[in-house]
Amino acid sequence: MFSFLICLALLIGGYFVYGGIVEKTFGPDDRETPAVKINDGVDYMVLPQWKLFMIQLLNIAGLGPIFGALSGALWGPVVFLWITFGTIFAGAVHDYFSGMMSERNEGASISEISGIYLGGAMKNVMRVFSVVLLVMVGTVFAVGPAGLIQLLFTNGGSTGIVASKLFWLVLILIYYFIATFLSIDKIIGKIYPLFGICLIIMALGVALGIFTKGYEIPEIWNNFANLHPQGTPIWSFMFITVACGAISGFHATQSPLMARCMKSEKQGHFVFYGAMVSEGIIALIWAAAGCALYTGEELLALGGGGSTAVYDVCSKTMGGVGIALAMLGVIACPITSGDTAYRSARLTLADWFKIDQKDWKKRLLLTVPLLGVGAIICQIDYSVVWRYFSWSNQTLAMIALWAAAMYLAQNKRNYWICAVPATFMTGVSITYFFAAGECLGLLWKPMGIAESVYYPIAVVAGVIAAVGFLALFLKKSAKYKTSTLAQ
Image 1 (cartoon, rainbow, N blue to C red):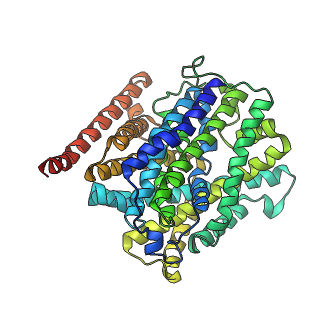
Image 2: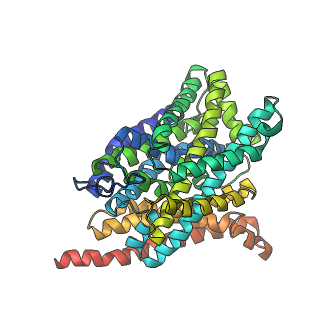
Image 3: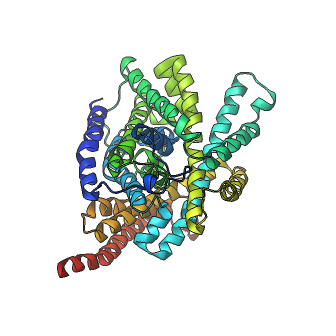
């Protein structure tokens, strides 16, 4: 239990201490923000700070800090360390700079930002990469809730259309269309804060239940080992699995939404860094629940960190009220991330092809094809789409951090606060790409290389890539140091 409380204290302290350092490094000022300067009444408009925070939290949360953290508990209490330090030094830094760089560039999407600081070639790569990722996010966050609603009605004895997964999937996609098409204050600005409050209450209820019902959270120092029942390596599988609970590239696609609605740059610390720390706290609570309530084998039998485990955790910690909150959380949270995923995809395409989104006909021109592609992808096996989403998610985080490091280098500021986590995430992403079965792992086995040999090769590839990317960055950033000396 002390491990959990120490990590919780570190997260809260990290917001004030390291978050303050990050903010000072960026240097927010009193310049006119895009929300005031552009204000098109659709995507650019001033929203109250508390709404900015709640919308940002729900945008980035989805199922990540719940499913990912519970799945991370399979490795044991060591997952607390990744959630805590990953959030403070990587995830919150990533979210802050993604939002603030967008704000400094008139609310530009992450693909355009990558082009500005990493070059035109990377901009085109990120345009395609981010749109594909966003559509996958919208897909997995539509299929999952539709299946859960179907299960709820089926277990309740219902038959007919309400027990049809297709029926609920169609309804969710219709909602996605409306939320993607309308101005941001019509639906998102009104219902998101309410669902955000529910997400927080749900996490606090789980934490209270753990303490009041006598569950024991294991200590890190007594379990400092890989406890995964299947022996899955911590590096880099745990870092990919937890994802949104520590760092997520998906957040880089969401932060520009709120960057277009801030009245002042000084709101960034609370809105971007603060929302990620809050998500880290939620993830820490769910990871603690997984470690306290189950052994690794028991959690694996419940499907790892899936909806069955969420339902069981809420039932054990909060009873009937918990079950109601669980259903609301695991249904509403992904839906409210899925709709903003499609909205971000629309805005990314609008930035790409310079299509003004104030005209409803032009918004319709982008919204309909995006939802059409999403409907087609919904027919693909959910687990396959999720695995590719997880890897592409962390790869996008890696690129966003390198863009932030280059932004700092160009502005003669301490780029190491972004370059270090960027290097780390490069190693994570490339190792997973080489090792995971859905990636290049499929290519190693036919060559007759034994499992014990193939994994170290993936680790070495990740290390080489991380060092190589850092060396390339230092070479590119050196010219900005030279220009400073020349002045």
